[in-house]
Image (cartoon, rainbow, N blue to C red; front, side):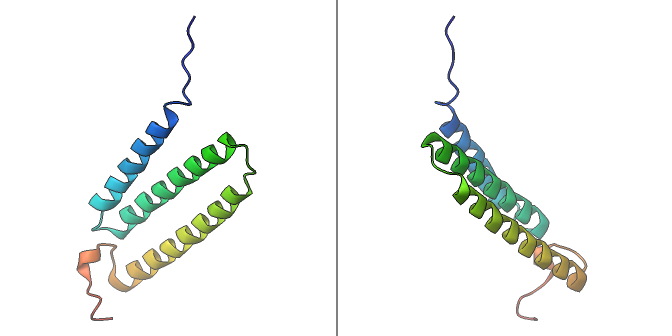
Length: 102
């Protein structure tokens, strides 16, 4: 029985998922919440790709923990900006406010 190795398909799957997230980021630029969700999807995809790359070359995974820490800080900062935007303007639609009036 012939076995099929999925390790050959993972880089192509990773690129496909990354470009789907990049497409979602480019399409959802009108609402801040959808933009932040697509950015978090891209960060998780990069984390999985980095973790796969580090385990493939049998390096330590400490760098991926540092990357994940920075990703959590980025998510908390984006959520804080979203909350302050909703409190000031009432919605997260980016076209409802002007940066000049701030």
